[in-house]
Length: 91
Picture 1 (cartoon, rainbow, N blue to C red):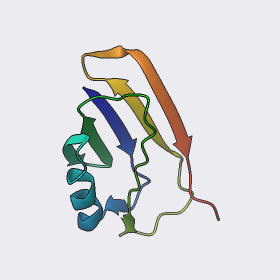
Picture 2 (cartoon, rainbow, N blue to C red):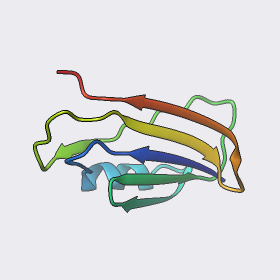
Picture 3 (tube, helix red, strand yellow):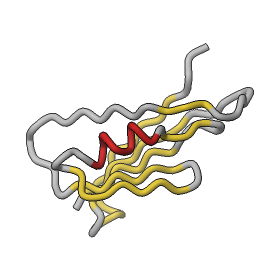
Picture 4 (cartoon, one colour):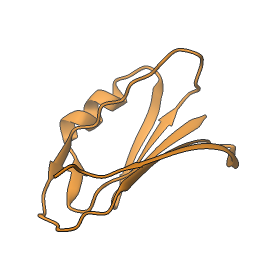
């Protein structure tokens, strides 16, 4: 099983529509939303390209946002191969 861990920018939440669209994808086993982090559990990855679009809603105006991060790792070997990415919101 593979986990995509998305840390949200401060003041943003995942929309309920976006969560529903994620959960309806056949590759997605489960979606968990915790405080400022979204965990997307995938059955497995293969050599097929996958694109995930998350719709976020800003609920609190925050100045000087810090970059958010996305990590992809194996559930059974979290210390093994990890792919990380971080980004902020353009001004």
